[in-house]
Length: 484
Ligand SMILES: [Zn+2]
Image (tube, rainbow, N blue to C red; front, side):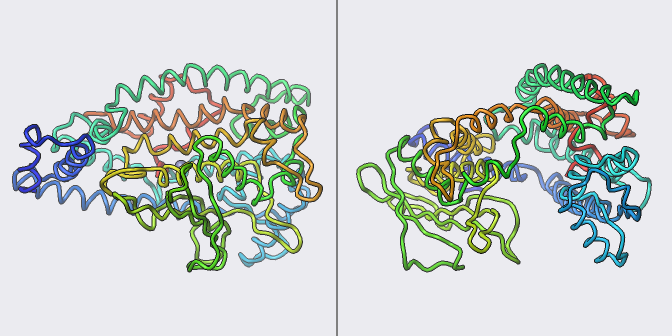
């Protein structure tokens, strides 16, 4: 740190390029934010805080994991399955069998079970049961309770921020971002909130109308949202994944993403054979600039297999630095080809492919002198910009017509399906945006407090949500006791 600090103090006299200055600032800040400028006593306290936070973080996540696994809804009467599609009944029957209760159906809090249950089950009391179990995770006053853990975490984070010269933890974290501070973040979130909440309220009204038609005199509750939204979706669009999937053969979508990059940036991607890879599923492409010079090598690893993490991401096997070009990969978990049927992607997967390729472009197009500043080594709130811009191209009608061709007939996706895809993009977004923003604002509230002593975390959450005017039909996507 002495050597870094020495350079940092003289930086105005060093005639640095802007990239060198950025690298110096970044390096210096990394030390300072870890406590390099503190006196010995404060450094000792910071080490204790970091250690405690790491232990508490593990306990907090383990408790959520336990809660997720503890809840088991066994159904033994077939009539209680009303509304559930056949594939879902089958998987629930297998789950019950694996849990030692053959002949029954098992439903859990995991997304793949809870969400289709809330979406399709006609059994309102059971929907309520599974919904309430989910939003009360870590809040059952038992050995998995997280209320005291979250209070301690918030308290230690505040102490850490103060040690390092900040008034609250949010400002400590945001000091390293484009957003810079909590005020800027809150004005962005509040602005979005002013649009999202009225939209969510309008959606709630629409759902209520649908319930009124059934004539039971029931008022829409949080556990009704998914069920009536699914009904409304069918009524309005009548578009299922099965209608769009044939147009989204993986290779076609990938070539579409490549073609868009060619139109926008003039780059080309050509498949390379005979390059060593870690698994036969991995494909390799050479990426060239418009003038024919090499930009890098792009690896794709698209299918799930045992031992591979789920989800989708981009990373570098080699960072770009000076004349050394990068080796970039996209790893995803797309639907695998089965028999004669190629991999046909869902709408979500199509957007994921474009999104991750946007990150890859960020890594491939970079031209820097230093690894520490090249590619995706940018501030946290810039990282998702290239990927989100690229993701938006996926559903542009002009782009869809370039790549979305029926895998059997070659027919270009019809205008009426494009129209429905575009309409569906905003369907239920009042709900989605509101539950996400409520959680984001709760997070900001938790990390801008300046006194945590004797804080009642649930009362704090309620007060924050009441202040926002959050409607009871929607809970924040993450609550204090399971905000991982
Ligand atoms: Zn991303």
